[in-house]
Image 1 (cartoon, rainbow, N blue to C red):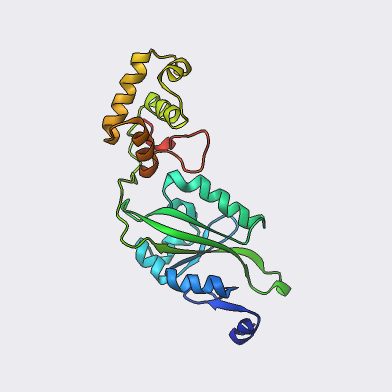
Image 2: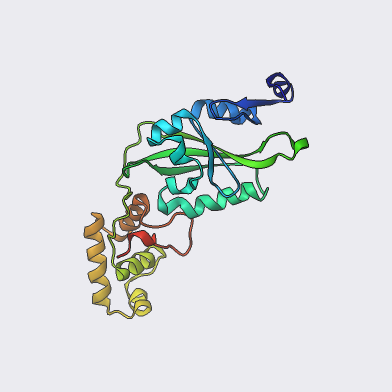
Length: 230
């Protein structure tokens, strides 16, 4: 199908990828503004990417193609993002938008707005399969807010359980009962967590843990990312 025919049908080709793919004109306009684009298969493996994507991540095509896209997303956000993509693959939605933290080579994090769109790769009459186009726009002027990208083992197993309990709304006595600790034991670990995350109280502790990526996003009850537990 030619570009002219696509335009007449209310669709437009996405340029900048190795192969042409079609997507609705609204998504095309977003893509042109966003700069970073990748094409994924239904297993969320990267099949194609544009030059801006390679430049931002400092990777060559051979290092990118075939790699799981969610590996480039901060661990705290991977599970929630997989659920969003599953909705596209299963046909439950046509598109979604999300705020994510992407991780470049060397552990450099940068926040971005991500839009995922279910598209058709190739003409339906020749058996084109559903593919996912991902468009990303780095947040303007956003600075690293302390996001942990190198997966340091910063918490003990008990610290993690206490942080999860605080995030779930448990006070000291219920936490002590659940974790078979004394009240003083819980307070000892809480004080240690406040020092580690450099915050003054429990509410700030939970907020800081989410902003650093220590707590998984989109999961209830709260769960510490396993990579950060000793």
